[in-house]
Image 1 (cartoon, one colour):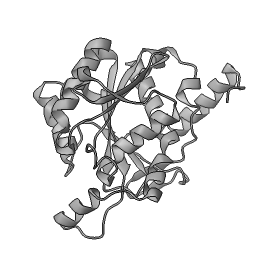
Image 2 (cartoon, helix red, strand yellow; image 1 turned 180 degrees about the horizontal axis):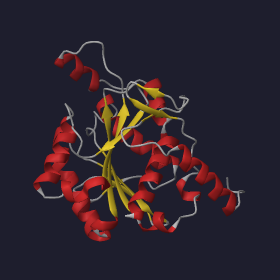
Image 3 (tube, helix red, strand yellow; image 1 turned 90 degrees about the horizontal axis):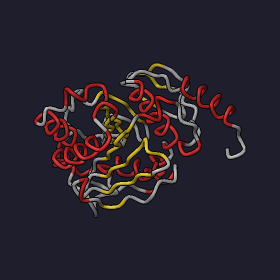
Image 4 (cartoon, helix red, strand yellow; image 1 turned 90 degrees about the vertical axis):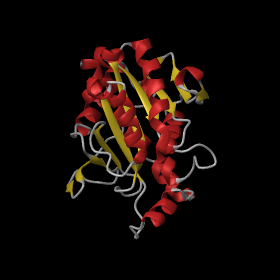
Length: 258
């Protein structure tokens, strides 16, 4: 990729952008052929060039995204319920951002940012899933006060029972949380601060599929989501990083356009 000219990169990015031009509420799968499914539209994504190599358009360069993962702290950070954390860390490694470090100005969450690529700031929630809202609200207030609310977007990564392992689904951030207590907590905190409506379309969620156990019993589901991921499950989620990068790039361009 280092040998590509800027013009070739731009052409590659445009082709990739066309491939990811699916609507919100889309389900993504690298292996799909761009066919409708029962869960929505499955897009045939072409991986974008890595963000750190991609020339910034004016709209892209003005946007600032806080990309926050929800999950649980150690020793539960590698369970299915922490799929958002696993996806976030994988993406950070993929685009060569610094290792996340605890930051008191972000409510003690782990933060990764790069001065050379200011568009993305990655944030790993430090709290248990069901208590995600208050700390994420503090982190968002700090982030948006630095960059200005109008040019900022919030992306929340979380586990999604209703998706097959490794698929991604993008939704509006204020859409129904259904039974996801982490999303409920985030929405309630933003609503209480008068920010949920103000954020509007600049708040989106990315569900990371973990599959669902056969049983629908509450205790069985709880045991499943709190179970440790086996290596093949973790690898499946890690393999989505190029698709996730493409989704975030598209979101940054949209936020930058206002």
